[in-house]
Image (cartoon, rainbow, N blue to C red; front, top):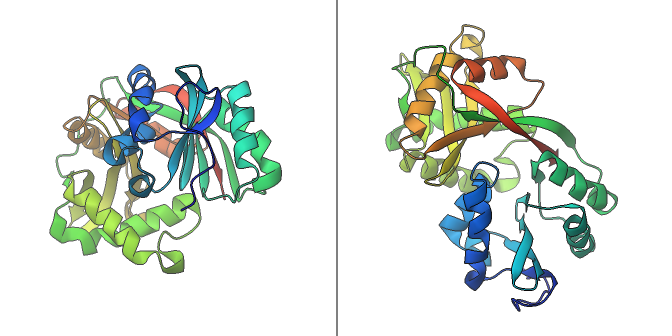
Length: 287
């Protein structure tokens, strides 16, 4: 992995690579908005700012000794408090580099600013999802939790792995095990299960519902990968199942969140019935 040629001097204005000694500069962003920054906060808590451990790097825009904005550059390109001025600086830095991200994701306006600048160099996009409501489980559920939803056990990896692959492919449009990625994806799913962050309901030994926590900090977690077996869709299962997932997720984090495509009305209805309410909007650019 080639590091970007940016200075790490804390008093230099402009774009620079953040290193292990800069982790404290990100804490105020994570503390002030734990929902919006959940993904990056979880990755940094797990891997620090080591490029090897992070599988990428974090750029910062510095003004004197103050960090104004940041950008996770990895398989996902994720902005932190990016505005028009700092977006232009990040775009200038990235436009001449090979795109490594398969997705730009984050607050709607920040993603729009980055994509406007990066599209000539990185486009065309495979898919643009301009409106993805960000939801937080902060209201009483309208439905009773489904007691049959429980954490997945480590020995159930082989039973649940096909549903992970199916859901990812349905949602993203490409298989997570394509191009020789099966072993790495299997390891990632196993890690999620082993951490107690994968939840499912089985019917006669058959998995019919699953969801997992894609990012976890003590302050906030983000649910992802919600999937119902095609034979069981349209039966009103999702709301009660999600109400159970919320209860289980609260054992990991204080705030339970997720984001969803605005056109997915069945999912939005189920999430609202299980106590989720909208607090903002993300956008995603998929490559």
